[in-house]
Length: 434
Image (cartoon, rainbow, N blue to C red; front, side):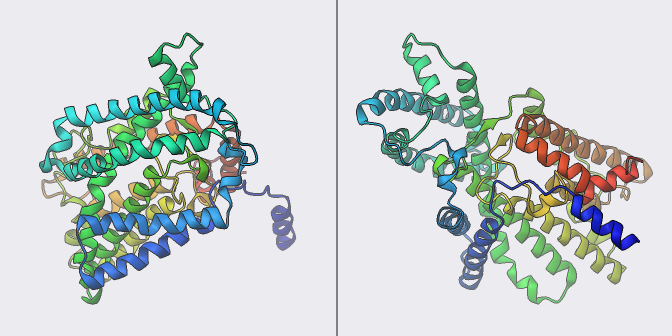
């Protein structure tokens, strides 16, 4: 009887909505990256240029797979029709206005970079290296944007986009301005300008540490092995994310459909990143002051080898879930944007697997309930950690509010609420299970 009911339930369960990213895309990129990391470890290539090659090592295979196998350039969501080519006399005026808007946007971002001392201070991280990369890239992008825009506009179904609206506004052409498209253009480039600089700053240190410390795999110490694997997985996350911020290209169907328009979403996201990060060392939400930091578990559990090994395995597993959530995006990862709805990989289990895994990792890694300063400091650390988790819950809700404007996300969210294990578990815990 039970078996019959189970089969009936499976037969009537709704199908999981299709994912905007092919399930194999991330795995192909991961294979390419793994090959490069193996070469880098073998040859001791731990410098920043090797890290940039790591970005290409995961990006190039993914792009090749997406175009040759998944045929992403043929999707209707690209807004392109390759069977139609507008005559040049129609393309040139629109493209010229669009280039004005695009170059003015880049000039504004460059002005922010040049003005803010934060981006040129080595003491706050690798931002000067990011500025070096972007400085070299800018003239190449300016030159390449001309043929790229002309080529794309011949096939775009709606060529007058946000960049065109901004250009028309700057040139005072006397035509109605699509302000919604222009504002979305500004938000999209603000996201890319802010987060791409951050990713280029953090990728080299993480990649370099992975290469330099790979000998820990042979140490036989489960803690050393776990710490190296955790560092490797965080490096993988950063490398894939960097590729995602770079490859916002319409022919790859990885363009930004919309950037989050809600101030609450921007506030919740930006307080998690420098220079406004609140949970950094010495910040108002620094939960690690009274604990031993992110490696506190290695100290508190140091006298219990079996527990230490099990704890290490849990932390590696959580980090793997976190990294796999980024890998699942392929080359579409980006904060505060909608670039297609994911339903595969860890997103079959939860709508927010990365946030859930990251926060569980922090709780288990820092053990805020244990403190060198007594119960008072332990209580403070737990309150602060709870506040950090609350911020990520806030981020999740603001992202859902934005993505919920798309019927595809609403369909996925409804499916996940009824079928994904994590939402069903929370529903059961809260007494909402059917």
